[in-house]
Length: 589
Image (cartoon, rainbow, N blue to C red; front, side, top):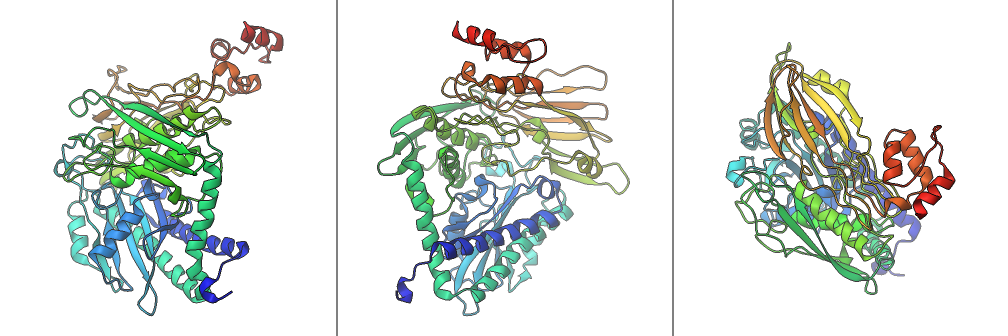
């Protein structure tokens, strides 16, 4: 075998892959431990990855799928287009939704890895959802923005922020005068930069350490291996075409009639390809709900990977078997400036991903997945105000309190803490104690809601109720809670998940009317916001559920005895045990 035709054996392929994944994990650990805002250092709303020199996704480790499956490749292409000559020590800040990013609140650091000969070998990326991105409204999800100018966010279309490892202070000054909490922002900026530089340093060490031919051969070998796994997974899926739709909630003065989203999905199990056509959807809307090219494509791909039934590495190799058709000026497609994409990572993105997963479930029982609970309940509101406590000051932060949402699959119940299909369980819930130390906030209660699961042969996760309010001073909260009108949808006879709800309990004991999907409220000491998140949807008919699972759910307080009887047709005796004969008779009749 000549060096030009050298092929890595499985052992070496696994070892090199582990090294790349380890570098991404080191970047992740750096960002988690050095970020200033709790949405990053507690909630973990960030992602890191490595791309090849020609902009192909190589390694993403434990990243939020909505951040990385598509988008990093587009941003890296922009970097090479805008800066044809890349040198060691360069770093680029990129958050433009029109140039490959997810949305303006996801600030991305791109660093080209350039070796001692001046050759661009890889690109590392660190992306973080900031607590404040300069929006006109103190939130990073500005659904009411008629266009990007009303949104008001700072947007950097791949701007050089470091040259020869030195900051471009003019760019940083621009950011500091538009961010409500500049000190917190600057700490997060340094964490992003540090994570990217850690990735650069470790890749340069790897370049020096590994055999050049083996390292050069690795990306294509890894892509081919991943593609083969994808081929095998698709060939197990049922062959066919299906169209599935879902509805977004109405938002007064923003989306008064709601919106239907359609996904046309075709699985060719013989050719081992899956295509998703999203072109049959409305044009871009005069609000912040429009998806970006990155999040449109990513959401469709998330629905596919969630439905495969086997583990396939998400990278440029496995992506070869997938096609996502998008069109310009489409609410689920390629946005045209100046349409706002402020909410591009959650609401419509979740609908797309869930629709694709549901479509595969419609092709055959035993495949795909029901719909996850809808984003984003009031328990994930962006809060802001002034902390009147000693050494306090202005604050902005996104909460990550109780939020469940797991959807049922063909052979598993919903994942309790998935927190949305686009997050895939990688977001972390806030620590109540740390949150109450950092902000003038108190958390009154958090608990799951009995009988709120999407019932089925396998059940969605129950919804979650959270109560929180200001400890001192006033508090502004902005949320975009989907599912207040249209619930998550079940499949194969599974029931829908429960709906979302939110309202205010005032200090005098009175309650507000139920609040809408998109709200900005101010509350005061003694008041508290009540957030009820949707339950995940069910898979298969509830009366087919294993009675032992129903008994366990009743014992855990997730399901009442009455619901066990009425919905699942399972009869329990006074001791809580299954009455086998009565259950069999009940289900038979």
